[in-house]
Length: 257
Image (cartoon, rainbow, N blue to C red; front, side, top):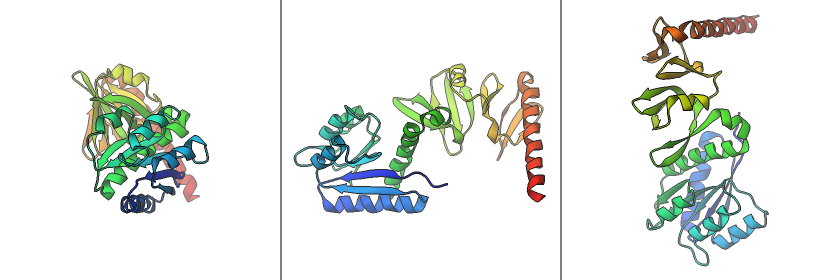
């Protein structure tokens, strides 16, 4: 299924950097098979006028900081008063404005010359926020907002295999990384879809969709990954897992017939 079009704008007074960013954003769209519309601006005032007049709407803005007439910071400050959701990433030669940028809820602040991998990372982060905004009800179950360190992070729960209580932290074990926060495990559980995330032990919550095997005292996810399973939760999880296997066999039989 193809992702809905991401509407992006690039605003930089230097043509070389505008075109370079456009090529990187286009490359990402081709690589990920995602439609990305890209508008180019050489000044912030024109972009601002289009947004304020509602002749253009954008999901993601790449802004230079130092531009004649209106800086990227000034534009973002004005924009945040009417649109708290649009994703803003600053791409600049100056590091002096980073604190101001993040006070305006900037998605990222990247120094020139920019690399394709950085653009890809920015769009990946933007996609989460875009999805969260456009599909609020669905996103409430799919995404979880936590405070990790000093940063607010949206976690894509579809990529979370299990959650572990580690001393006074909760650790989200994802497919490719770990993210921790200081919220109690009990509070995290209350914010999850409990048809998908289940306690296996007082200190562990498992994503049922990743469970490959249920043993006497552990739940296995494959690749040597497992978590403890207490007697309190064993029978319930075992039965749910067996039911999932039965349904999978039935679906296979129907496909063969």
